[in-house]
Length: 320
Length: 261
Ligand SMILES: Cc1cc2nc3c(=O)[nH]c(=O)nc-3n(C[C@H](O)[C@H](O)[C@H](O)COP(=O)(O)OP(=O)(O)OC[C@H]3O[C@@H](n4cnc5c(N)ncnc54)[C@H](O)[C@@H]3O)c2cc1C
Ligand SMILES: Nc1ncnc2c1ncn2[C@@H]1O[C@H](COP(=O)(O)O)[C@@H](O)[C@H]1O
Image (cartoon, rainbow over all chains, first blue to last red; front, side, top):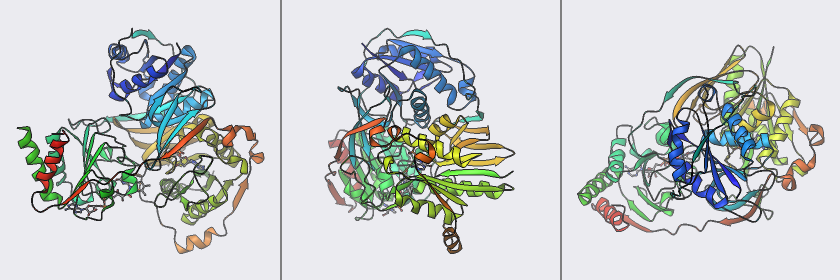
């Protein structure tokens, strides 16, 4: 059976959920072979094996952390040469999309980004994508070379499927462009202790209507009562009320949770682009004409400063 | 020596209008109102600021696109860029990202450059991959997704706010950078700028000028194929309740019914 190369996103050996989703999709096309790079690469093997990786190629070198993107492309190309895969799958993060882009050019293959589903097809893997702020869905495939495809988080279930997960060290030699962009310093983002925005089952977001950084405590309290991640509109981010890393929308994160709760958000097209595919959408807005109400399963026309705290209290009561 | 900056700008269908696909499943660019991609305005703005800080700099704006794409070039020129290059050829219709990167890279090389500045993503395709592809093709460093950028003594420096960390980056010129919408508001063209733009040179190039075979671009030459397009069914509007004092409780009841609580 053909092998499918899966690029692993992990933090010191802890595999992130979107990579496990990639393994589910990879198994529809062939046998997953994973590539894990950097510190903790070998520690990923147990989890990857449990989710279907037959082999786990690993490499570690200071270059991966000290220089931007290109060393990882060199490693992925080495893995590609050694595996000759039927397809290469990567998560749709900012960095992995760039790695995918360079690999595609380097191996002369087509590239599909931000797939939300993937199936085997007669002419190679068929990717489903959302277009124009999720107003359309398209089916596409790579028509030249080996398909290189990046997949958005929450596009497939995580499914255990035991495989060997044998660790195989990969030899990587870096080309002369690998050290072109130096990472002079790196400040890890502080964890909020809440679920990861793109992976969360529930997202609670606040917009301009929240009217101040201190008021985001109301949004956070609701999120915590539901075990949710916190999101923000660009208006709230631009006002400095909440970090950009929590922005939902075209130039922020795109989320597709089971439940999305928008408070004080009008529902501009660029915001919708990042949340429109959520399963259930709920909104609280004092303007009955706000476009967000076109999307909702349940909406409250009202003042978020009274509705949200009441909702939080009621959720806590019901949860006991 | 003069710092040669090339800014890549895309002409895109207006997100505020109706965007759709043509019969051949390419983005409909005929019937839609187009404009300079808002995310590329940030690239033009950062290029203008870098040029201001340099002793001597020249900014060329470059687009690959149909006839109307000249509007995007005009807007960038009216913001303050010095000259424009428009790659226009009927055989370009339907070109995908890999093909576009080939055309842009050839045009950038022909123009001559020390620094290429791109937006973070085009607002129609939203791939965000062209800057990395250009760096790969040109064989120069990529310093991408920057919320802050500056150039000093032949070195470009920037701040990249990634998912896991904020990184400070540095590379020697020549290089390709891309900037995000966090890099600072783009200026509006002044009346003087708009008048001046009318006199600025716009050079037109076709595939022949760039030594590109037609089978490497266009719909036929594309590395990817779109086989089907479907309009997502509009979400059916659910229940909307006006808060009369019990809104929060009603919402909680709904969430409980849906098993979220
Ligand atoms: C290229 C580009 C990219 C963009 N990318 C993004 C993006 O990634 N994400 C994003 O979100 N936006 C993005 N935007 C901006 C987008 O167009 C909107 O400007 C933005 O989403 C508006 O945020 P908002 O809904 O919070 O604010 P507004 O549109 O001002 O809406 C605030 C809402 O709050 C309501 N409200 C006010 N007070 C209360 C109250 N007390 N109780 C209840 N409701 C109240 C109001 O009725 C109103 O509907 C982008 C724009 C461009 C041009
Ligand atoms: N046709 C084009 N002409 C000029 N620049 C482009 C074109 N397409 C993309 N770009 C540049 O590449 C960036 C990323 O685009 P994309 O990878 O298509 O999302 C854009 O912000 C532009 O700076």
